[in-house]
Image 1 (cartoon, helix red, strand yellow):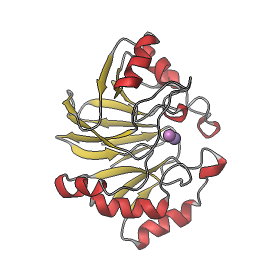
Image 2 (cartoon, helix red, strand yellow):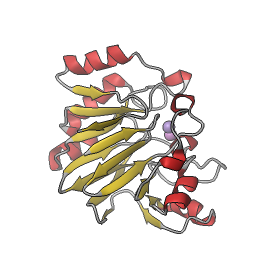
Image 3 (tube, helix red, strand yellow):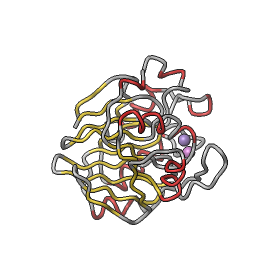
Length: 226
Ligand code: NI
Ligand code: MN
């Protein structure tokens, strides 16, 4: 699969013929100044929770692309009120077969409220299973023991995990998470955007190396093949 990083927690994955955009927060991100959201083409927009740094560009991108917006019940209804018409509500524990494969919503240990203060449902992560490979996008979360269930019942080729600390788990807990999930291929998210979550890249990569794992820190705007 191809993975393009748009900064913070926003990725575009291309897998099994589908372009899936996760947690679009681009235009307010100083580090992603060179990204023009008008050029983003996607078929699906998946939103993990209601915080502004995960969805601020979702309405514009959903309307300009016509992509299917997938999130929890509360977030989807918030977007329906804003005139987004192509939506699919889900919630934790459920899965749905989309044309590219299976999406299962799983627990994230985090809070969730919308930019206007309204209730944002429960934060969640996504397990994606396709004929071309499987991956887990955790969204914002603490390390939690439920991640062992993924390692026990699923085979993930790559996992997207937060490494910025303060609001989510940091590097050390992400290494433990990847043990729980039984996947040594990690893409880092939720780091460097704000002062609270600035990390030392070399140190993070070295810690993963020492644990026998690979941490990808993709330069913003770059695409890698995984
Ligand atoms: Ni958050
Ligand atoms: Mn966040």
